[in-house]
Structure formats: structure tokens, C-alpha cells
Length: 319
Image (tube, rainbow, N blue to C red; front, side):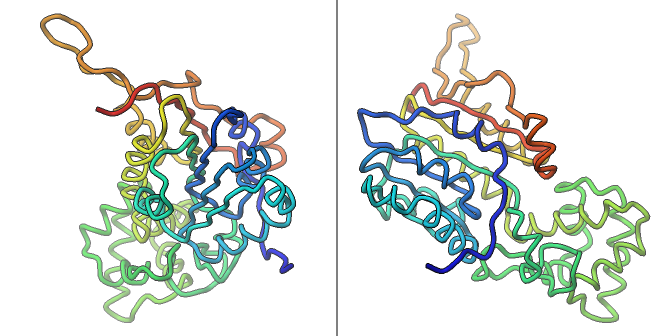
């Protein structure tokens, strides 16, 4: 069997796995919306029962291949013994509903997300997500999509550049960076990560500016926030009553979207005259506050430090 090229340490693994009880009296259908390299999936598949179904999504075709190898290496015999059905789908999670419909799934038992970028996108220099090495300005998860980071820095208007740098990562030096991008691209096309890095470093003395700008560009290229909102809405509708949706987020803007989306399903509409509830909540929190990594995980995996896990149960159908 071919060996996987990459592996990573899954964040909040035990907390995520413990957030769901696998049913013994019905078929479990589990959906991993952000398969990555299969770190969470390997542990979760190992808990499934005979004839259960696992579906994993990833927009990055390379991730999907590595995840398949990692999962197979760890628990291939278990999958065969239990006759589990495993579907690994190369698609953005915004296509959750339509892709599940293709395999005749309209209700799921548990659906979960591990947001942000998997570590391989920074560790693999061929992915061009990091400014540590020189590569083309790309940043697409799905190489079949058309918009790249190079397109953005060379063609977006001043207002649009300001929007993504301020809204997505609240970059305080946006004006100076954008002014220099506009000047530089008149002289020559900004093609590589090194080209952009030089512009950022000459525009801001804040060492975090380069991180924020690169991540803002990645979010825009992949429409990460728009895809997240759409996918969460569909996920709640697909979830069966009594079952769980779990989301691991990493930065505040991302977590804000998750929290706001879930709050729409938690709140009830109240009659202003009678004070009675006119609608029933769709979701309820399993934990009052998000779960965060314990100290031993922080020590062994510093990349987990900003992660939060929100777990909610569906208690009513959407009418």
C-alpha cells in the first residue's frame, strides 16, 4: 500500500469524539465536512458499528488522497470487518446537501467541522499558502476554481482590497499596504509570495501584518466565510432530531460566524402581546461554553491554542 505523504495532530480529538454517542439500534451516518488528512476521521470511523456510513469532504484533492491512505493504514481491517460504507468526496463543504443527495443521503446522525487550514497547507511548500518559501500566489484549496491570490492583488480595486484586509483580519496597516500594492502592480505584476511579502514588510513594521494579509487573501480566494454560512445552514437541516453538530473553530471572525448561525436556530420568536413562544428552538447547546484544549494538548501541539469546540443537539425539526 502507498504510504501517506503527510500526517498531522488532530486538534481537540478526544473532546470531539466524546461529543457523540454512537447508536447501537440504528444506522449511524456521520459526515466530516473538513476531512483534512483524516486525523479525526480515523478515530471516529473506529467507533462505528456494522453497516454504518461515513462521509468525508475536502476541497483539496491532495488532502483527500492522503486522508484515504491515512485512514486505510490505521483501520482498514476494521472497515472490512464491519462492512462500513466510506465515501470520500472531493468537494467544498458548501456543496454538502447536493453531494449527499447524490449518494441518497437526506438525514445524518452527526456532522462535524474542523475549520481553518490543515497544517499541510503551511508545511507543504507546493501549496503556496505560507510566506516561508517562495511560490506563486495561488492559495486555492480547489485547483479547479478560477480565482487566485495573484488575481486579487493585481486586479482588485482599492476599496475591495481594503474590505478584505480590514473585514477578514482587521489589519491596522491596511492603507499603507494597499497603497504600495497599487504602486507596485503598475510597475510589474505581483506574481510570487516573495513579491507580496516584500511589499508588506516595506509597508508595516508589525511582524503579524504578513500573516494577517496572507490569511485574508486565502479567505477571499476560497470564499471561506460565505461557504461556512451556507454549509452550516444546510447541515442543521440535514441533521436528524436528537443528534449532534460539532464545530472546531480557530479565529474570532470564524467563530463569530459559527456562533451567530447557531444562535438563529437556538432563539425562539415571542408573541409581543401574550409573551408566549410562537416558535420552538431547533438547536440547544450541549455545553454552556465552548470546549478548549487542555494544558497537555497545548504543550504537545501549540497550534491548538486558539481552538474552540461548539457542540449542539437538534431538538426540533425546521418547519
